[in-house]
Image (cartoon, rainbow, N blue to C red):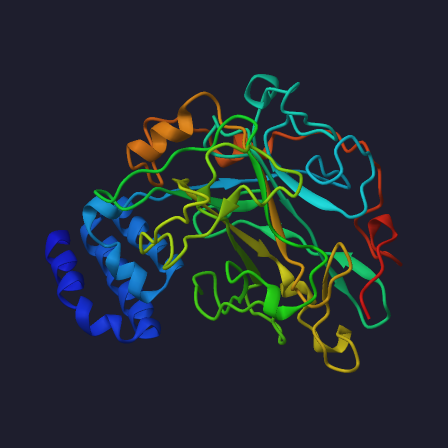
Length: 382
């Protein structure tokens, strides 16, 4: 019966391509029907995940050979002012980050001296061979000027996770080449915390106002202007082309690029300067803003009340950081074997096990409660 539903989806492809918003809704409905009546839980989830990429891409990727999409949860590791990429060796960096991933995280992670997978003893990620680190932090500023940290919450299917984010690694569509996994010492940043210009925001960094946990449309480069019933999702899609040589340049970004035309999902070609295709690394971070939806607490002028920990109220300074830390050849194996939600080639652990991994806060800031200023004394842009 599942095969008949899949045929229906593929047969409707031409009509649906002309209406991306409608195609998202219809595909989601059919996926849920498949899950309920045929008990094909894994296949249903795989197609549900394709909603992440928009209507046309969903349908392009529905073929069985194109289902690879490594998706997993990484819970919170620690929240503190450390940034081994931008401020290596500094304890008490300018702004706060929420860190997820392996417990080898520290103020100084010199790749020449630190082998992350061998130093880490645990990870907050459900794929237990991933000791990489990823980070970000958001605050709410009340009408009286005080600040409250916005907690993160688990995504669909990962509701038990202690905040953190959902991480995706995507290989190319089967039959259209392969990707080269990141190498030891590889690091990158997408976005710029100093940016306040909407025109300079990478289109791969967006916000989604969640009407419910399954909302995946309406991405914008701005903070949502109205209360979001199920929270705010931040989406970060990293570059997918590498120069093949540099692991971590001084700016942490010039060694990677986006396709010269098209997108990763449409198999767009890499530019000659960055010829090596790497996995599409993608974060979904859900901020539980629901406790701040009372308009009476928002600024009197009606503007949105959220601010990044580095003082940005526009949202245009949104950025994402990545420190590669997979063990051995695990990530390359997962990409080569088209792993998805379940990956027998990788060692897994439960969300509860991941929740138990943490590191000690060595900075000691007061980051919770109502604060009169942002941690580190960061000022909010006027």
